[in-house]
Image (cartoon, rainbow, N blue to C red; front, side, top):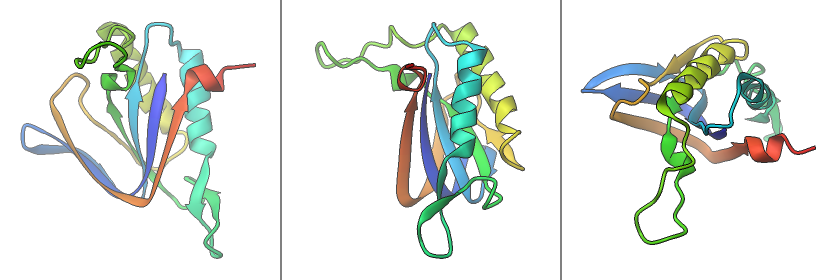
Amino acid sequence: MRMVIQRVAHAGVTVSGQVIGSINKGFLILLGVEDKDTEGIADKMVDKMGKLRIFEDEQGKTNLSLADVDGEILVVSQFTLYADCKKGNRPSFIRAGAPALAEQLYEYVVSKCGGYAKKVAHGSFGADMKVELLNDGPFTIVLDSDELMKK
């Protein structure tokens, strides 16, 4: 599982010209799933994301968590996080999770994010989405379950 976490001043996702999810200050999470992912892995990823201290305190140090700033979360599925560009010029997505598993884990992650933010918005799995954001910093973190789960 991969999460690209962007600290944002605001973000929104649109499908067919309609805004289906939007947040103010918080995290925009682009989520990629692969076939070996499980709910246990998702739990660890969401917990790590929720406890990240990447918001600035009164002294300007990145010392505050999402809860400390009453932040919100927007989760958008993005299978392209598993693009393999080693051969040729056209990416392969063979490592991306099968759609049924990916959608199930995406919905699971969205539900688990509710434990870390007062508002959780999300995109539409498999849809052609337009995502807008104002990256705050910019501050972007990549969490990869392969790294997080190493002992």
